Structure formats: structure tokens, C-alpha cells
Length: 319
Ligand code: NAD
Ligand code: UDP
Image: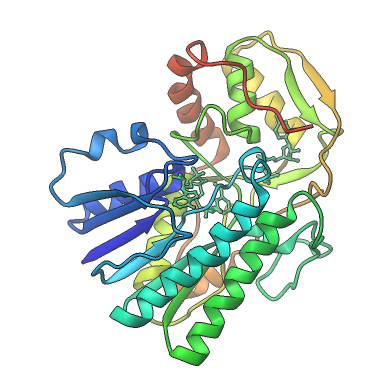
């Protein structure tokens, strides 16, 4: 198949591209390299079945493909809050142009949605039927509401124009090729610990997240795309819920770091608890994550070790 990945030079997109190429598909990456990097796909450049275009998904495009993974969008709070209007446009225009193309060439399109559609959830764990608790006007809204509208537009094209859609609600994902200036908790803590710098916990560290290793996520995305039973939305994530303080302690112990833990202000609207209910993914896709945090974190530590001293201090939330 010919497969388009928007955002294919990013963290998850580059792993997806690699898996699809390995499976013998032709892959086209469309990316504006806003948060992605050529380094993420450098090892794939010799593959004749890969094409790369620098393009912004807020402009239309025309390609002949069988299916589209629409991943283009900055995913980390420091990046998506830096240019919030652009973030909304990337989600909303990006999905509309993907759907216009899919409608015209009769391709299937999978939207990378997010657990952020549940906001700071009042139901726990989060099932797909939970409608969410999202602030429409806060600093995270450009991302959360952009992704919510993207889901709406997906379903409207599906109902009105019969476009073949799939929606994945992706929960916190980690792994090699997260960027060093990403500002997300796993990359920040590992870089800080490798440099023996203070580990910055925002708030009291009792807030929770559930972390999914990137290989498991890619497997879930491909299974969702490749089946004909459900369109979604489907939660994809690892239900192993941990506090942020526990993550800090694990990283310090795994690295043998002398870093101390320091506490900083918790960002506005930062969700207190997050854990996916993945029963639907289990039933419909036969999917469940297989890599534990104890197995996955050391792989990311190995990835960051040579990079840690080459780059500046880890990224901080904008004040
Ligand atoms: P990432 O920032 O590493 O990758 C996003 C990619 O999209 C980058 O290569 C970036 O350059 C590209 N991009 C951004 N804006 C663009 C635009 N306007 N035009 C073209 N390309 C653009 O993020 P990621 O972690 O790989 O996330 C991929 C997708 O998965 C995103 O849609 C994100 O919202 C979603 N997601 C990720 C997570 C996670 O934990 N990583 C969780 C939930 C949802
Ligand atoms: N966080 C933290 N220190 C950091 C980066 C993040 O304590 O250096 C916290 C952040 O406030 C949030 C959690 O870790 O409560 C997860 O943050 P991340 O940005 O990785 O993901 P998201 O909030 O988008 O789920």
C-alpha cells in the first residue's frame, strides 16, 4: 500500500514510518519539521519506498495514497502553547485537508486524537463514552479543543461524505526519539537525572499519568487502521497508572543519579489523574500493551545518554 503519514518526522510518526516500511509498504511523510526532525528519519533515508515532503498541513495538498495517518500536530505542552493559534489551525485545518483528500481519492484516514479530549477527567479510568471536562479558554485549550473539533470534523465527513475514518485516542506515549527539548515529563526527568541536575516536579507530584511504550502504540495504531469492524474513537494507552513522583524516583534509581527532587508550580489545568480503559481496544483490535515501564524506561535512558551532555538544559513550561 501507499501510506501517507502527516507528522511522520516526529516521535511517534517516525516509529510508525519505520514499521510500515519494514512491512513492505510505500510511505510518504509530510511534515513542516516544527517539532519533528530529520534525525528521526535519517536511518530510513536510503529506503527507496520512502518519500519526504516539507509541507504545512494548514495548506492543502494532493497525493495518491491508499490511507492516511494524520499525526501532524505538536504534542508537548511547551510546544503547543508557544503558538496556540497555529496549534488550533494545525488540528482543525490539518484534519479537514486530510479528509478532503481522503474523500476525493477514497482513502481511509486515521486521526491521532488524544486523552486530552477528556481534559481533567471527573471519571476514572477514562472510557471512550466519557465526554470530558475541558476548559475552553485555558492555556491547554488550543490543543485539547483543537483535537476535539478534529474528532467532530472526522465524524461529520464520515456521516455526510461517507469518508472511511478511524480515530485513536492516544494516551501518554514515551520512547526513543522524543526530542530533547520536548519538555514532557519522561524526557525532562531522564535528561535532568543524566546531568545530575535537580528533577523538576510541577505541583506535589501526586498527579498521575499512564505511560505507553512507543512500539506498543504503533502496533495499536496499525491494528486500528487495518481492521474493518470499528471506526472509533478507541483509547490506546497503557493502563499502568503511576504518580509523577514515582516516575522521578524510578528514573533517579535506574540511572543511579545524584539529582535531588525540587517542586515547582503546577501548570494551569494540568490534569490530576489519567488512565485509559482499554477494554474496547482489547475486544475490537485484540490489542494490549506488552512493554512495562520497567522495561521501557531503560531503553529511553540509553537513547538519551549520549545526547544529554550535548544539549542545553531540558525545556521548561513557558511562564
Ligand atoms: P511530535 O511533536 O514529535 O510530532 C508531531 C509532528 O508533526 C512533528 O514532526 C512536527 O514537525 C509535525 N507538525 C506539527 N505541526 C505541523 C504542521 N502544521 N504541518 C506539518 N507538520 C506538522 O509529537 P508526537 O508525540 O509524535 O505526536 C504525534 C501525534 O500523536 C500528534 O498528533 C499528537 O497530538 C498525538 N498524541 C501524542 C501523544 C504522546 O504522548 N506523544 C499523546 C496523545 C496524542
Ligand atoms: N511534569 C513535571 N515536570 C516536568 C514535566 C512535566 O512534573 O519537568 C508533569 C506535568 O505537570 C504533568 C505530568 O508531568 O502533570 C505529565 O506532563 P507531560 O507534559 O509529559 O504530559 P501531559 O501533561 O500532556 O499529559
